Image (tube, rainbow, N blue to C red; front, side, top):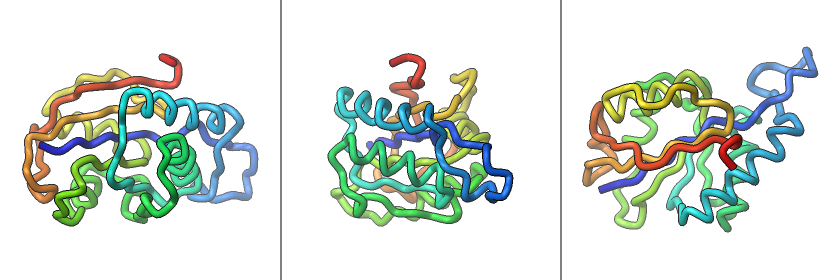
Length: 166
């Protein structure tokens, strides 16, 4: 059994038209939501062994803020360009590529929509979440022994919350 927690990046800032989509930072609401989500995850006992994050500034910053609230340093985060606006197959390849280390039982990802929401649906085999808003969190238990076995329908949604729920 493995655990996978998927987090959509916090609310981003659209104020600077000169920035590329990849370089957009978090806005003030996002800078408040990410640590709050991190604290809520800590209260729920979440302790990922590895964090995979999109390289986009808004996702990377969300990952760093959540990791800090979980008591993890930057070394726990792997930035993966393939997770930037990732589709279901890209998400699946990234997670399936996690090394088979017995100490890596819980992986947390930070990405974007619609891919994050679609990946949850893919893993559970059905639509269970209506809206995967910014900084929403879905935790799944995966009925797999090895990360490379991840596939459609192998997951069960065990927790979902948004910053609005806190």
